[in-house]
Image (cartoon, rainbow, N blue to C red; front, side, top):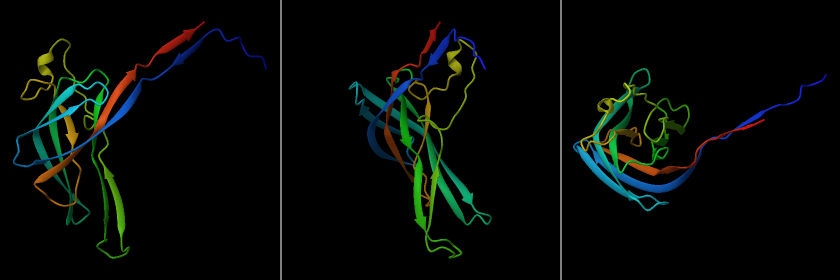
Length: 180
C-alpha cells in the first residue's frame, strides 16, 4: 500500500486558563434583597465588587412519596469592573451527604449531588438581535447579570451558603497553525 505525500498539516491549540483560588464564603438570607462582596484578583491586584441580587430559593421533593426534599438557592450578580474576555468566576455548588436510609437496608448511605454548569451558573443561551444591547439582561447597577448557585442542602434554611472558589483567568487564546 502506498500513501500519498502529505502536502499540508493543520495544528489547532485550545485556549489555556489558569485557576486562582479565592475561597470566599458568604451567606445570603431569604430576606436580603442585595449582598455586596469584594475581592482582589490574585494575579492582577484589581479590586472587583460583586452585587448579588434576586435570590431565589427552590425546594425539590425527592422520592416517590416526596417526604424528603432537596433545597437550593440561586442568585444573580453583577461584577464591577467586568472581568476580561474569557475570564470566569467559579462557584462551588456541590454537596456531600452521609446519612441513614429510611428502610434501614444500609446503615449509612453516601451521595453526591452537584449542579453542573459554568462559573456563571447552568448553561444558558441568550439570543438578541445584533446591535441591540438593551435586550441583554442587566442588574440594578446597569451591569451585565450572571448566575450562580449556593451549596445545596437537605435541610430547609432561610440562609444560603455561597462559596466563590476562585477565578479562571485566560492565559492565551486557542490558535490554528497551517503548514504547507
